Length: 473
Image 1 (tube, rainbow, N blue to C red):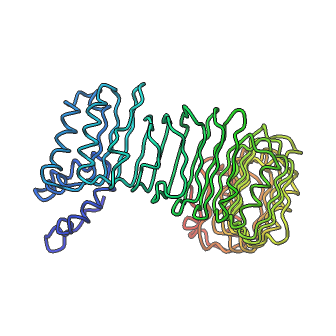
Image 2 (cartoon, rainbow, N blue to C red):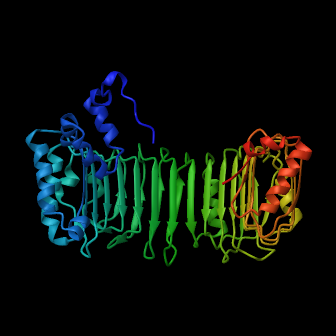
Image 3 (cartoon, rainbow, N blue to C red):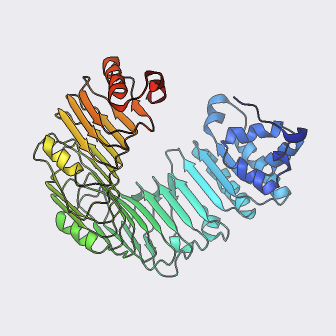
């Protein structure tokens, strides 16, 4: 490790303003922050006034480090004594017997202008939030795990980000115009709804991101608002819940993970999102036909498993840049990918276990003259691979166990990565070895040597320069 040089024998970092020092410390793990206090008296003071407090009860229980509650109290009282602002307060509890103390800690933190609160309860009993949390005028970020939300969200007047994970929701999540006016991001992950099993969000002026995992017992998810840019829906409801995002006409990113959605529902949903740029589909088992026609779409990710019913995937997207398609289906009739002629701007293509005829892969690749990055992974039946593309820069052929021959005609290729059961025969024409050709350790030394000879005989590279071009990852 290189030693840091001190210019003129002066510690320049310690001379930075305290707010910048604290910003640097905020990127360190809690244990590293504690260690900074031994550097000098100045750094001890920086640590004492550092407005981020993180407490985890687990090491106190396992290693018997002392009285956990007293450590937390002393730290909070120090901020109160010197009237120091507190930016972030994080607590992870394992014993419900400490819940009364947690109420007091939160009140102390809020008295010091707390902006970010992270609470995690690892006890069997959920933690009920005290009233001051809902009435706070300074709290902007609230992150809860295994807690109870027993008051309406409309009480939060300053909250900008709300994250709920494994929480119990005792009141309906209904946000209308005027409720939670500053809210920008809302995440509800695998929560349990006790009463009204609904999420309704409408006319939000600032809300941009919504991420919801709908559990087995859920009735309705309705979101609308022109400010919303990103929605993620993971739907595991039984029976299927109502999902409606028709009002999010300015949506740019949509992630769907649902085995409830039908073709009709999916295409109706897409028809309401004309500005969509990124679409991610995971485990949508009931979909049989996916037809996408969108002039704004740039990224498409489709991930299937063996239970899929998908037969046809049709894309017409002139702005398309990136396509990832994964499948575990060994049925040769599983899914046909059809690409319109307007989709000529694609730059990155990743195909994982796409079981199809050999010629179909070459035909698909030929649709993309501007392709720069190509990954083919887990093509168990593929024996020959032919790639002809003038713009291709990176080619990765991974886990194609029966591959016997590779033919590449890409003059700008500078990274080539191939692994398999055997060492395939290959030919590379008109290649500029301006970068590196990459191999994994499992690539046999025979194939590597053969590729070296090709570089010497065809490309004209001297034997002494081989090590500068080929390297083993």
